[in-house]
Image 1: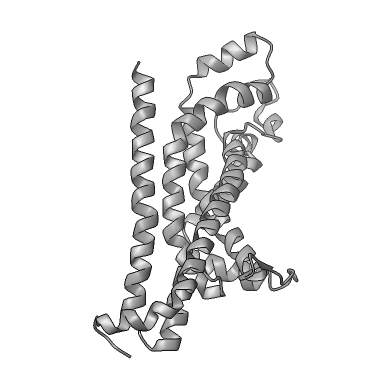
Image 2: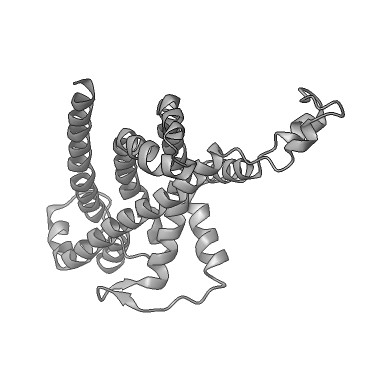
Length: 261
């Protein structure tokens, strides 16, 4: 196997151009579905973390009807199970490797579930692609959760008071007033997460997803050439990520100018 760059090796890998094209499509689809799933998960997690559900709040009232400030009973009365579950989810997934999460989802969860074994677009194996999307989406949701939560908290609380004075419910206030403004503020961060996912999706080739790195592996096995396929993969990732990041930066500047007017 060659360990240095040779121009002749690029000629050897030319017949496998279709593999890289297919890998490019799979990578883009992985990233799009991952961000969509991650956003839905993150929105639910963010709302759970911002909730004020305290089913045991009655334990914080003493016999005289006063609010307990200290002690075990006061701590239990402030316990929010939704916030606890969401926080645990975020901390666990942000503190463990993506590769481990993908293996757990693929072998541990979907190893027990029989997925249909059809091919999307004629070459994407659904039973490999779907677990990869789920694993990456769950991981992305843990990171997007904090972005969405900070975006919601950045909205002036006076707008909530105004919505209540107009008779809007909490759900209506969130849907029509808070979320539209919060999404505008966090849109650049969500778009940047899309760029991150493009690069992180390379890890899914370990479970047989036919992405760009899977094409590199196939070419290496067929031609015993490794450096040149890796350079091609690097160029493809660069062509995906660099223009996308510049477009995001452009729209971010446009949006910031609109806020200053």
